[in-house]
Structures are given as C-alpha cells and as structure tokens.
Image 1 (cartoon, helix red, strand yellow):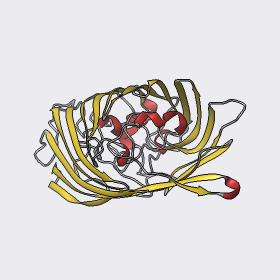
Image 2: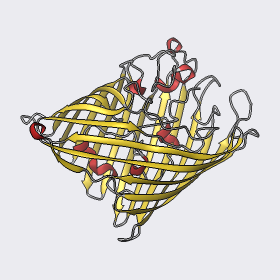
Image 3: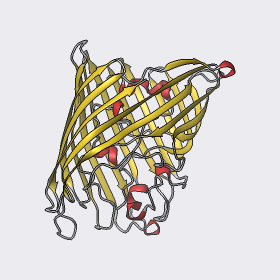
Image 4: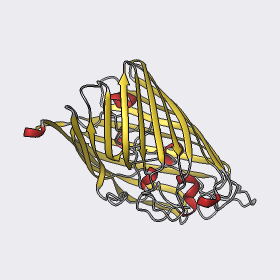
Length: 387
C-alpha cells in the first residue's frame, strides 16, 4: 500500500469566482489578501499563512506517538481581474486523517509534487466576449470534496476518510462557466500528479440563496495508470493502483443559519477490475460525513468538527486499503474549539476512529498498534499566523 495521502493537499479550486461560496462559513476567517500595485500587471493580491502543531496519537505501531510538526507554510500571489489572470502559490502543507496511519503524522514537505515547492501555479483566460467563462492551465487544485488540504479552511485540522481518498493537485487544463445560480467546472489532467494524463474531474454548484448551496462532484479515469507510475513524488503507485485508477461521485450541501453552518457529504468511489493495471479484483469505497461550525457571536471563539461513517470492500489484501485493513468499516468524529484574534489563531483538535470491522478477506484481524486495536485517538494543539 502506498502513502499517497500522508502529507497532503487539495486546496486551490480553479474557478475561484464561482466557488467562493462553498466554504463561506468557516470556523476561522481565512487570510486577508494584501493589495499590491503590480504596475503593468495591474492589481495583485498577496496572502498566505503558517501554522504548527504538537500531536499525540494512540495507539500506533510502536504504542504511542507524540511530537511537533509544521503543518502549513504557504504564500500566494494572484491576479484575479482582466482577461489574463494567474495564481502562484508556493510552500508546503500537511493533513492528518485519524485512522489512516499506524505511525506518527508525516512531516510537511515542499517536494510533495513533481513541481516541488510550487503548490499551485496556473494561468487563467477570462474572455470578455463570453462573460462567466474561464479557461485555466497549469498546476491546478482538486474539484473533489468539501474539505481543503489547508487546515485553516476546514472545521478541524483533522480530516475525514472521504478526504483521504480524493484526488488532489495535478497538472492539467480546466474550463469553468457561471451563469446565474449555476456554476460548472471540468478539469482534465494527470490525476494524483502521476504524469499520466487520463483523469477528468467535474463540479457543478447551484446556489439557492446565500444560506443554501448544493455541490455535486465526480471523477472519471479515462485510461490506465500502471503500477510503476509515480504519485505525488512519493514513489511508485504500487499496490495503490486501484486508488489511482478509481472513479468517484459525491455531493455536499452547505446550509447556514446565523452563526451555524452544517455541511453533509456523501461519496462513492470504485475501481473496476483491470489486469493491465494490476487490479485483479474490483474495489469500492463509500463514506458519509456531517461537518459543523458554530461561532459564538462576535467573540473570538468558535467550535467545529465532524462525524463520519466509512466502509470499503476489496477482493484482495494486496489492493489499496484505507485503514491498512482490507474490507474495513469505521465510524469516527472530530471536535475542534478555536480561538482567533485578527490574524492569530489557536485550535485544539481531538479525533477518534473505531473499526466496526477489522477482518481482511483472508480472515486475519488487523488494526492499530501492536495489538491490532480497533480504535485510534489523535489529538493536536496548533497555532498559526495568517496574512
């Protein structure tokens, strides 16, 4: 099994103008861009952030894991008006998914992608002759799922199992169109940053009003990515070939009422039997989650979190598995009280995952720690600066 998701990702939706409403209600206020006079380039926006955390994970392979890491360090420069626009974002990020690892959280790295420290980098054409249309090309962000790969955009620093199996930043071309309450985006590229261009992603959003937004997303693999391809500069695809050659459909709905934001999400992923790709049995992944955020009036305090259910089915222990347990089934939750004062924030995060099923196709029991326990607890204390 590969460790594609250990240090990841997922920010940077391409059609920013049509997707800003998707995460409008957050546990934290995101970076406030610094306006810059770019001379012949026009008005530019500079933003970014850095945060770190201490962590405690129990159990893991060695019993208990604790330590400290840098979570994110990103700087973004954008031009968002005119017929020719661009986005450049450099740095690194990392995410933590309870239950997805039997070791300590991975260190964030600027070499996650083939593009090195270039986290996002694309040009956008917005022709005035066709209002609402944009065409982008370069290192693009994912269209899949509600959660972001940058933790200050999420209700919790801890991410769900749904996020763990979604596609992420990759090279390609994207076309977006917005008319009235409807926006649609299609991206074709080398899904999972493999260098094999055969993945089509799509997102359609419908804004009923400022409090209700429906989003439907999908991914289709149009070819075969072999087991020797590289994924996210983290080594060959290997037994993760079913993950990289997968297809996906999902949806999430954002509802806001005053200081409360609720987002239910459902997702189904599958990979067909493909002996050419080394997939000798089909695999399926199904997950549902409910995200929530509540801000306490005008105070600097808020609380976010999520609850999830996740199950997967594989025909062989050699196929990619979410929790290192083929045919696993799990429930989990996370809660994250947050304090933010202007550009400073601090957050405590606690998450727990419990395996409802930990028996693989051959009858072996697997789990967390040396005793193959069914539950895993993850706790972090993080702090950061946004600008």
